[in-house]
Amino acid sequence: MGEGPAHHVPVHSVGVGVGQIAPDFTLPANDGSKFTLSEQCTKGPVVLVFFPFAFTGVCRSELAVLSEMKQEFADHNTQVVAISCDSAYSLQVFAEKDSLTIPLLSDFWPHGHVATQYDVFLEDKGFATRGTYVIDSDCIVRWSVINGPGFERDAGQYLAAVELLHD
Image (tube, rainbow, N blue to C red; front, top):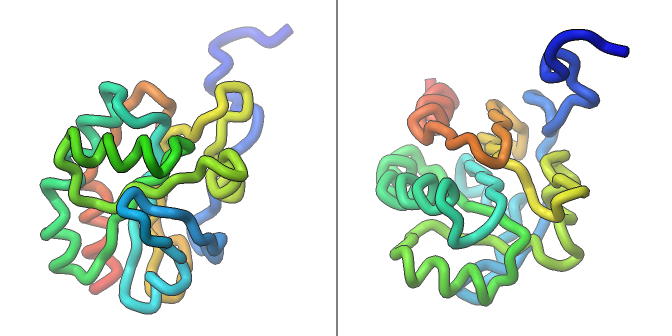
């Protein structure tokens, strides 16, 4: 059998590749509205942030940082949205309780459909891993990072990637 750490040989690559067209979708948001990626892209870049579950430790701190940075992204005409497999109702309570100001999108039904399109759905666990995609106004993926469920991402990297779109 194989010797050495398994993480050196990925079973399969995850995520939609940079340079690919981002799969379009429409999902309900925590405020009751609907979010359609292709419509939002016409207004400017979009940062999609997949996260496992509302009310969990790493998710809370990541989304708090993104809410604090909302204006910095807005200054680059960029919309940040977070997506989980929680219901829109749970996300609404989560946003209120944690004073989150970015839209939270529900990939609840069909369960994990959008996360699956982006190849970040963990089938055996029933939730999305920490995938982030910076998508330009032509709906092309320009930057991405995929972390395991317990590994926090650096939102500063997203902002740096967005800034590069304007150079």
